[in-house]
Image (cartoon, rainbow, N blue to C red; front, side, top):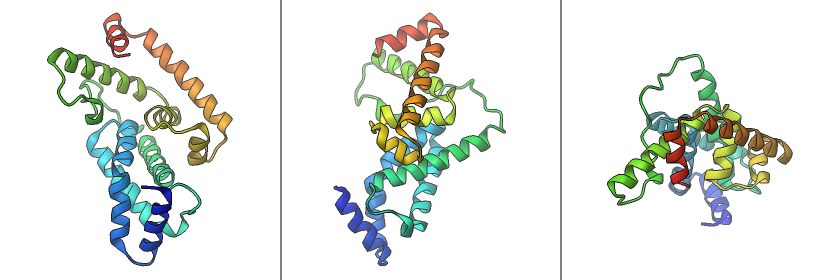
Length: 195
């Protein structure tokens, strides 16, 4: 699954082969969904956002720069769409009374009851901490630590400089550390046990 193969699939799609775009979707749907889920914190909304990202990618495929990574390009579309959704969401009050379920990719296949409870609490805490970050900081954290993208890749995706990304990540880590300090001791113990 090299980037070279992605370019061939894009070229086939532009030539009218819709199955080729289906292969691109299959290749990157999990990455796009996970990004949307981390940004939006709601499975249904993340599924909608991921679908919209692929629709936008398909309708703008003629603008895709084939010298860039397709994965980076489609993640960029998804992240921009999620930030737009978060901006619209600010107008609506969201209840935080119900904890979020853990992301399926983060749970072990067969955890014991205690491990499952600790993992669930840790995932809820991490997601709540991410929720409190601004969308720009949250996106930088997700791209760096969940997708392991380099500063250069993130800067390219977000159309900014590497130093701006480093600054966002520094401020985001600082904000997360401040939030962790203000957490009750039991939450901190859960977070520490998971490290």
